[in-house]
Image 1 (cartoon, rainbow, N blue to C red):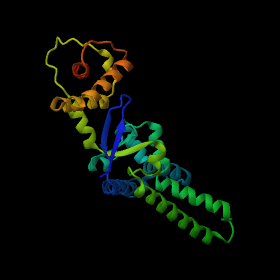
Image 2 (cartoon, rainbow, N blue to C red):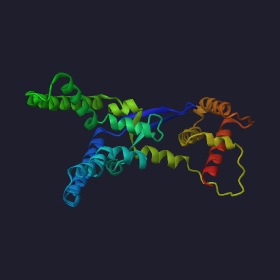
Image 3 (tube, helix red, strand yellow):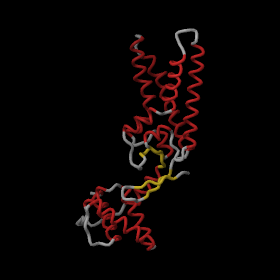
Image 4 (cartoon, rainbow, N blue to C red):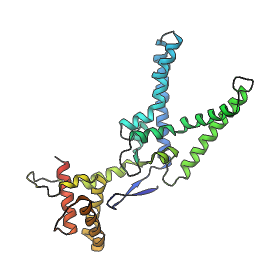
Length: 271
């Protein structure tokens, strides 16, 4: 299993488990089954009720069948925070290269560079450039199109398998990763700190400019330093960097300052 280390703006390194090719493949198969069942449902439950007019049948088929099949991954990832049904089942999700939720434009780039969208485009360009499909070359053009499609898909698969972080071409261009949900669950669990005193006074409201991952890094650093004093120098540098970026002046030492940030953050996010 590959592990990617991501540095936050405060030089706190966080690690995420990259989804294995096996998990991604199974998720892809699950999504394929879902799409196949949808197509079969259209075939047996919807198609016969469409109007007889050929133009209307074509339009409705495109909107009811073709577009949902084409946009399935994009729409699922946008509305379900980086997960399709297959990814939900396998416990993986798409995030951006910094470990945060990807943007709509990033999901769109992933869609455009999927094998089933990119390969036919490559094949079509080749056929358009070198063959007159209105002539007797149609059979040859079709054969070349199929060959080009398979070749493009093979190249995309090889790129995915040799990529260090399991990124397919769409991931690389979109600056996204597919990671295990456990990575997210782990840091959500570690940043939680119950503040029972409702009269608690927040000392550093600027802490809300930090991300959950920054806070997770602070929590882990405090836990390690609590056990051993080996990381005091590193902790002092982190505390100084955070004070500089957030424009905080305090007499607290590094450990107490970071502990206060952690408490302030948990209190503010639990309100």
